[in-house]
Structure formats: C-alpha cells, structure tokens
Image 1: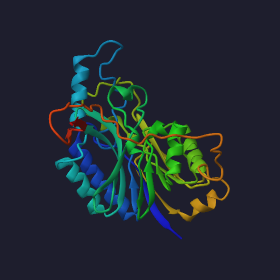
Image 2: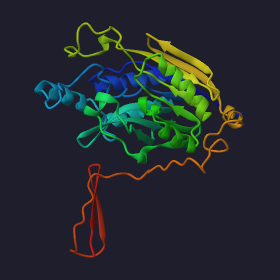
Image 3: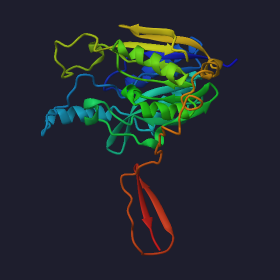
Image 4: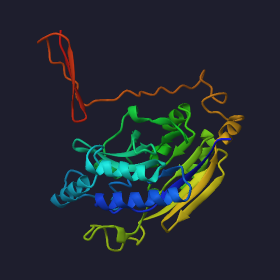
Length: 329
C-alpha cells in the first residue's frame, strides 16, 4: 500500500506584509509537520495575499491615484522567485522537511500572477502553476498564465498537481490534469461558499483522485490599518472551508469554517486504481472517436523579434521574463 499523510492549511497571511507572511508560513509548516504531514497545501494567494474587497480605484474608463498607490503596495508585497524573500521561503520548507504546495502572488517583471509553487522537502522549487483565468476583478491585478505551467509532478508522495480556485470550473483544464495522471489534486482557493465542498467532491469522484483543498481564512483584523473597504463589511471576509476528499468523493477531513486550522488525513493511493476500475475519464470511460481535447502547452513569450541579416548563427536572449529572439542568416 502507498499511504501518504497530508495537511490542508487554513490560515490568513499578514496582508501587505511579505516578511510577516513568510514568518507565518514557517510556523504553519512546522505545525503541519509536527502532525505527521508529508505534504502541506496552502491556500490561494497566501504569500502576497488576497486583497478581498479592494477595487483599487477602478471604474470603467478611469483609475484613481489612491488605487494606484494601493496596487503599488500590493506589488511590493508579492514574491520574486529569486533573492532574499524567496530564499527565506525555501528555508522554511527545508526546515519543515516536507513537501509543500504554496499559493503565492508571483512577480514577473511588472506583472503579478496568482501561482501555486511546488517545493521538495529540501526546499528546492520543483515547479509552478500560474492561474490561467483570473476570476472577475482579479483580472485588474493579475496576469494570465499560459499552458506551459499545467504542471503535474512525480514526487515521493505521489503525482502532484494544482488547480487554483475557479479554474476548477473549467472542464477542459480538469481533463488535462486527469490525463497527466494527477493523484493528489491540490485546489488552493479563497472561495468559502458552501458550494465549494460540493465541487471538490465532484472533482475527486470524476477524476478518481484525492483532492486537497486549502481555503484562506481572513479576519478584518488581518488587514492593515486604513484598508479601504466598507466599515460595514463582515468581520470574517473569508471564512475557510478547507476539505480533503478521497477518489470516491467521500470527505476525509473538513470542511472547516470560521477559524484557523490545519486539517490532516491519511491517503491510501491504491484507492485511485480501485476507483478507476469503473471510471477512468481519460481511459476506458472516454470516447476519443467522438470527443478530443487539444492542449497547447507551449510557453507564450509576449515578444519575439527578428533582428534581420546582420551576422551568422542565432542568438536567443532572455530579458526579464521575455524571450527576445534574434534570427540571423
């Protein structure tokens, strides 16, 4: 039998405070590991934060100076995948000695992405997934990921993948993950509605995989002073709802609401094969003669330029996150 103990972390970051959030990650990883977890899954946008309720001064056709200042503050609390803050995050994972999937607001050039970062127990970054479709007003502050980060990784705890928040409502994306053989389907989110658990149970049953969904828990007291949200807003803007589900859609832990918590469950990965006996949506239960899905996993650089005939050979240069391709004859 292949058994893995996992943890779904339900907690709040220190909003607009990267250093404080990284300290919290360290503490939560330590707590998850002390409960026997071999894998800890954190919520969407945990590092960098989810600015619930902010509009950043946006109206159709106009922006405000104050909104731009709040965006700058948000930008400055995001994570570069290099340098001191990232090294501190890697060290926190290394100290815990477990695998981790951590939701982060990733800074790349002047654009922010909502990402899930996959770490090995030694702190090395194994891969990432960038949210391909920000939801609603998230499109004001986050860029779009491309197909190159539809990541499923083969690790010592199983085949890990992550689908963020309402990406889980994209049937084609789910099917792509099933085709990659995902065993532990991580679903970091801030969606704390009752319907979220229903969706997670459906996905686990549909994909015959384990689902570990970590949901943020956010109090108004976790927001910084002067946070420009209506004072009449609820005391708990994001109430949690983390849940762990088996391949038959049965809930193993949660859902947990209205408090910080870490859910633990032991997963018997052999349940996946037993479940696929009668339902394998990318195998015997598929009809490729009728339905086919094509997935473009090529990275999409925003700039590729032809320099023209001024020498011999080819020279590809990376500037920031942009591939600048010079083709010469």
